[in-house]
Length: 379
Image (cartoon, rainbow, N blue to C red; front, side):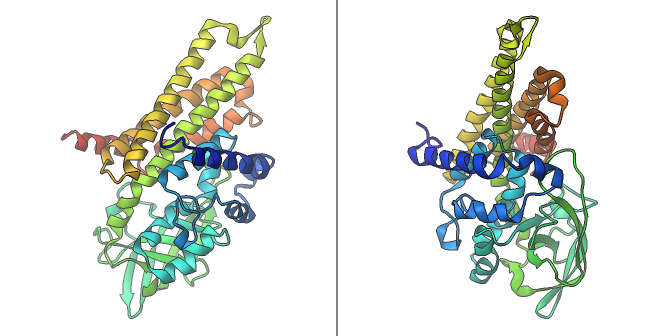
């Protein structure tokens, strides 16, 4: 037994697996083709207690911590879900933490509680058309005008941007690109706030992604999260959790693809023998399994240290890169082992192959993670 594998967390796994089996698997292919998951899924997940895992009960959550969230994410994918489903259903995992940390009771009542109850959907808007990883260079500008901010700018690649009822938005409050950032909650329907086209993607098909535009959007000062110009620090403080979530999606996808490949190689026969009877295939499967399990063990170790409050910025970056590398290797090998069938949309492994590609980009690219690691080495 480990910290991540306790009797309570085994029950959480069972709950998650039952939810995926009943509420997700019969419909996931349709959601992939529709380009989004239904809003009703959020309410269903909330009713069974999964949507609020990792959020305190005092703000409407189900309790638990980072490790419980990791258990849910891992089991969703291991049960036949996908990282795209995780992105769509748990976007609040990046949209709400800043509000919870700031402790503003009004914002918590207006946005956090309804979202964790599944009746609202939130998104996080940081990335801009002319800048991704350079958070300090954000150019969306919020000018103070009495008891409102007037916001102008645009955002892109926003997960759940089409369905979101509100967007936690990073804005510059001094000069565009100055690095002095604030976080504003901007509601859909506010005059001047428009949602652009649905962005079509390589993977994560069931997770809607959109462009956002702000033209003289008046946002009440009361919708600011925390003191003015503290947004950059707030964003940085939440990166560890986001990166560990992506790392979890990566190793869990690898584990699922190992399971799919093993079953396929046992069932598939060529020249009168199962594929799994050949040493070359068995060794490839063994290598895939080893990489997936090693990544899982390291991510769990780092997550336990983060949950304990240890400053492990470098290790989080390493965990993300280790898990993504394992996932890249395993999904490619798994599709290859499936042969022509693996190239079809009918094959689950095909979806994982497409979905996996974003994991080395989102939450900080592999290259940015390497830069963080290098700095941690004193380079």
